[in-house]
Length: 480
Image (cartoon, rainbow, N blue to C red; front, side):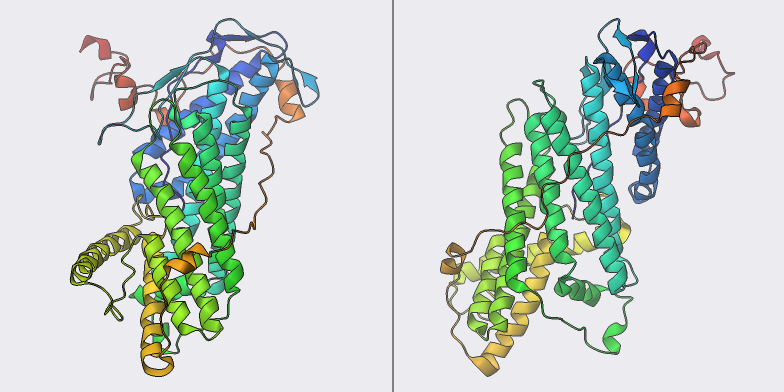
């Protein structure tokens, strides 16, 4: 499942204090107003409880899409460019200062990293577009959560959810790639460093590749349906398991594992600081889940060919790739006593982890899917191993070979998604640019906050802001 990013927040910014435009004076006012709305939306989103945040993502996306055209209009004016065929002149009177709170930087448990103070409009562009990419990723998570709804989704609903989530992930990858190619500075901020941007682009491609496999993979849906207490379809008929293009899906999973491995390597090559541990762990789990899934498809391909013994060996190879004990409880005679006890402990710990994950999914908590689907893939492999070992013991009685030689002979991966088209920043309409020629009104509106929150939030307290006194007459807080 896509990584549960946290959206960053920012401090107020008055463009008129740093910039001046002789051709389009109202541009600074319009950009400041849209940025204030975005800031208020991000603050409100952060304060919502985790189950309520997914439904608020559409508001965040709308605020971002409204602000980004004005932001790039300012950028075009500073570089002497044109917007909608009209030249915009923006003069930098003093260096722009912005503050954003990073969300991927490692910090002490229970504490947020401090706001980063940055001096350039480029940093504003990077953080705003990163927020847009995070929003697309979270929208993809929201789509995939419907696969675990109390009422089992139909095949059409499942396909629609996966297709929509794939589209969001490809858009996120395109934005990360655009920022990585645009980057010209050396930054100590992990969130917008070039290795992180490249890693997040590869991560989104890996997740989209696995979703292409999930769309035609019936086994995870069967396992999920068997755990759904509200599902009654098992009373009518057993689930249909159509034949899958097992070898092709296995190579697609290997390609996803390669992308995840690249992302992991790029996250670990940071020069200053280190990213969040849960992000690094998630990328590693995604690589393990992809390789374990590839082994499962090789097992299905072997079973379709009539070699059940080799299929079981592939399933045990998949368990090994997932980080679980490869020795099956059904055929563990070759395990030593120490190995058997260790496998039992790992099985108990895994059972606890699965129950915690089920509760997170049921509550819709923000941390569900933080194992990148590794536990879910382990359940699918357990189901197939239980079935095939029983068949092999009673009917086929084929020898189960060791799985190490199978892993060494795995083929290379195969791509299904070409690199996404480069992100094209949206521009202002011609009518909007014409309206920017009007003189700016009194006050630039930078203190405006949607919802009337102003600057009295808890985030501004650390910067010296004064909290409003409950019950006091407006404007008299200084007397208390």
